[in-house]
Image 1: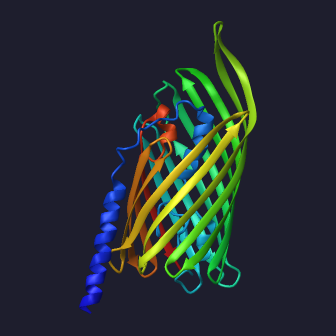
Image 2: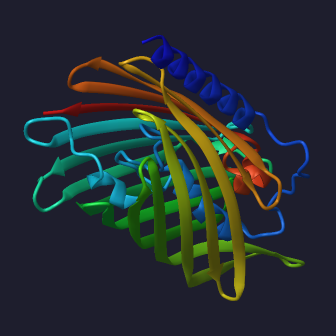
Image 3: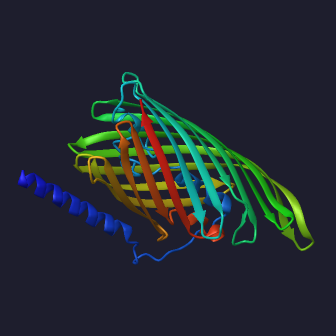
Length: 347
């Protein structure tokens, strides 16, 4: 009994030490913003991150619990309820340094059919305030997003597919002059897989492709003054994300991910390289704590922390906080803070 207690204490100490290490931004990397790229290329990779929910298991592609990162995770662990159904509304506030606020509201329903896998439809609504950014432009952003996810586990492996659609509108005003009014549709498919390499070791992989037709009325500045122009085109995106996790104690894991992304339109492109490492630790029978750190190839570091608490046998509350995880949008909006709340109830 004493040996087990000592082992548990060592696990807690290691997890806490790792969490502290991950929360410390690296001073060895020189930060470089994304001001050399057009805003249309920088918004898509940021959009993918602020609709992801930091919840149970951590923000890893090798998650044993249902994860917005890897669709295959949805069926890895069966829902702890009689009918295998989970309702999970959530809310995120994305607060930027310059005053822009994004309100992200989502609704998710999960049905673990036991035999045919897990089905998970979700919807998301994004609304912004009308604040002035660093460029002197008033920014207004509206998105309606829907997705359908399916996953199936077979022994030591699982596969999942996520298809989603989003419709967005962006307007930018300079005083009384509207300089941009754009509409875009986004279609994405993400395929994910999980495989148990050995006891306690889990390997995950997700691949995503998407395209986004857009149509915008804008103002071009010329020596003769503002001239209206019409912009049309299609943007393409590709994401590859492998990762690995290790369960060092029941429901306690450490993980590391790498994400490559390519976003392009009309000959211009943005390459994205991200590394993420974190820990999700079961502190008490009913309480989980988590922390992670991320850094990109340009030296921009971000941090995430959160906790999950079982308030009853059928209800879990997750709270999350993320700092400076959207460096692509810094040129216009400054540093970001994300506050997340998720309520999961199963029956």
